[in-house]
Image 1 (spheres, rainbow, N blue to C red):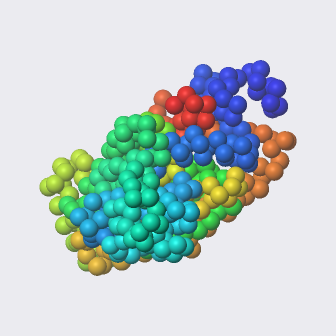
Image 2 (image 1 turned 135 degrees about the vertical axis):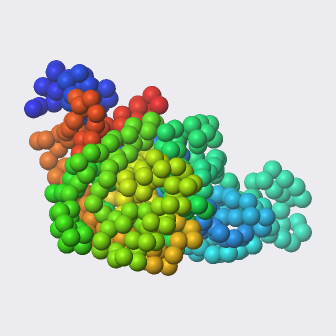
Image 3 (image 1 turned 180 degrees about the vertical axis):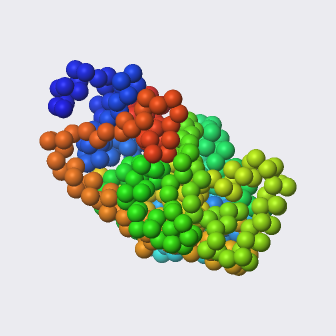
Length: 428
């Protein structure tokens, strides 16, 4: 079908999205994955205006802890000061622009720029002593020499986000119904969750939006990850299939999730025979504690159902056989950097922590069953977009006319693309 045919037969809601709800057709222009001008607009209208995930409170467990991170293409220091208060500063010296802190993490009372030696207390205040007469007596009376705080910093249940737009809505308003997913995650254990030490970093030669689509795409699982399901069938002693009943949740503001009872075990409270009888008794105890704390219905949902969640624009929470947080940022239209962290229940046993990490590495690690498959699929798609003059549109119509969406449908992606379109057209 030519672009002319599409223009004549369907309603275009933006230059890059076709959303025909009456006919059940949804298409995305492949130009949105390759165009430099589109990426420039995304940086302005999405990454500079949306709430972006920064880190988890457990990563800064003590006063004076810090870590450095690239968030939305900008270098940031995330830290706690001497009183334990959380801060996020732009990691650029007010003097001449060099990065102030170059270590990935540590514990420090102050930060010092290596270029000219300007120093700052860990609450961001300028702390450099200059010889008399070097600067005016009232130098820094307006705070110009202090580290710059990010315009907005907020947390929800220990998950910290920043926003480069001082006029943005509150974090809770932005998260909307995605808060229920974070609530469920924090309910895994009586004392909440913590990031397990370490971070996975890798690059994908593909557009960043492809990874968001992929992260909650139930349609591709069996075909793309067939080797994993064969391995899982051997491990559990029976057929490993995708769940018969699944759900798609539109969480508003571009956020969405898929949910279902898949065949793998879950350290939170779902046992499989491959874990052995000792693990079975421990799982039973975890389940009893969970039921007593949150009630049987909610406990069963937490324990038995896995879910993949996308929080617009670029935060993915995989709560499946393990819990993984991923963020990703574009370097170019055809290249992105990915960071991933594993979450675990605070205070869980050594055996279950090991099992959780094994599950994490086995499926979602850079060398696991899933991630290399997905990277190959996304890079293959990106190479295919060289032919966009001949084939200009991706189809994301699957299940669009159904009264109830399933994980193998594509409604969750349509939630993302509608929000993306609104923001790119300044309608959000």
